[in-house]
Length: 137
Image (tube, rainbow, N blue to C red; front, side):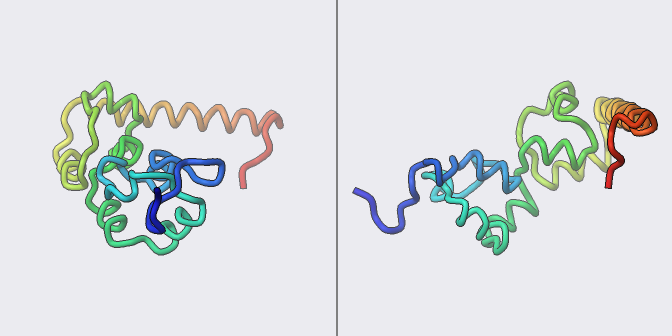
């Protein structure tokens, strides 16, 4: 028996909590139990995005953050995090400490990431010059 406050089970109209957490850019295990308990409707997701509750604002501000957010804030790829031995969620404080005092792996991964991005941009520019790809914008 369900109550009015129970969340719907994931269905075609409700997404799994993991999917909603990914769309919100938050680490699922750090979300409140009621968020993880059931499906989240598209309307609920939209409401969370437009009017985030305090727990969501706090989680986005201080973490722990999921790997894609950690990678973005450190300027490396998710694979780079794995190569550096970071396989867990990090808080904003931990990320800031890594930025202030980057270990050798982070310096190397930032350089690798910058080279990959530069090569990707070079290839896109070459494709645009050949006319095989429409210009961005």
